[in-house]
Amino acid sequence: MFNTNSNIQYKKLPFPHIIIENFFTDDFYFELEKNFPKSDKFLENENKVGRMHGDTTFGDTLYNNLLNNSKAYNSLHNWVYSDNFIKLFINFFENEFQYQDDLLYNPKEFDLVSKPVEIGSVFNNYNFEKDKIKPYLYSRLDIGFGGKNYGVDTGGRGPHIDNPQRIISILFYVGGFKKITGGQHRLYKISTKKNELEVCKIYEPKRNSLIASLQNNFAFHDVNPITDIDGQRNAFYLAISSSKRIWKPSVRNYINKKFNKNRVESSLLNKLLNIFS
Image 1 (cartoon, rainbow, N blue to C red):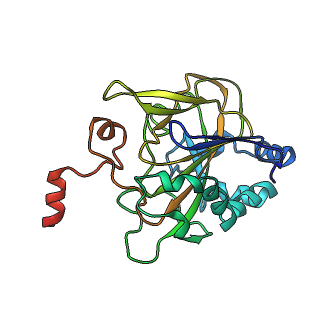
Image 2: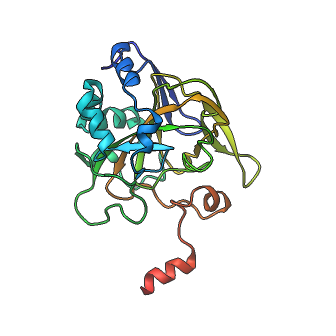
Image 3: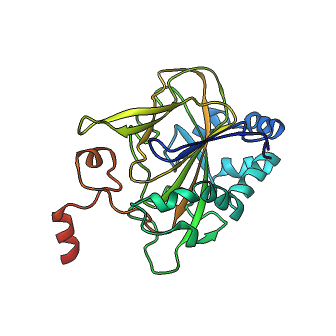
């Protein structure tokens, strides 16, 4: 599966992330691209994920058909839902954990669960596990596409940070278009001007390339909306998450209230309501 000569670039700004070009071997990648579903196949199925214009994930008919009809997709699934996948990306960022003041726990101390946990819709503040069992890490694979206007009412709907149990988010690009305007993955930093975000890094949706980012409390990112496309922007969204909140609540300020709603600390009124309830 893996290209041993792939080019790995480590970046610390605006938040820790890595870029890996030519991630898979040519033969393996070409099978992934060849068997990637067309948009009409996605649209025949209910979109339970809602991240892209069409998504499929474990448990969906379309997803199961891919596993049954393609050795490459079957191998991809087995790899993502394995200890090796989780360990690989946790180890990529291992040296960064000690510098993350907003981490509640060390992910290296958590158990690993190598099977689908987050089935269908994405876990959020209200439905991820909060019980007292020993916390664990788990992975996820979504397969989807974006068309015109992707990034406007999909793809996070503008700058955001992933849910507070998400440790690492991973994007992998699978081609699908001849020409595209927009569709880049953008990373933001907080501007020197107060109450603003500004684009810091821009990455093109390049075939057989991967972007993995540590989802700390400054990991603002989005998709540059697609204004024109010949074809479809195909991608995998992969993630490593914790069974419980792993990042501290973000400071309640203008930036976080606007762009980081799923992590910002509760208002004083909500805290009082929680106490009395």
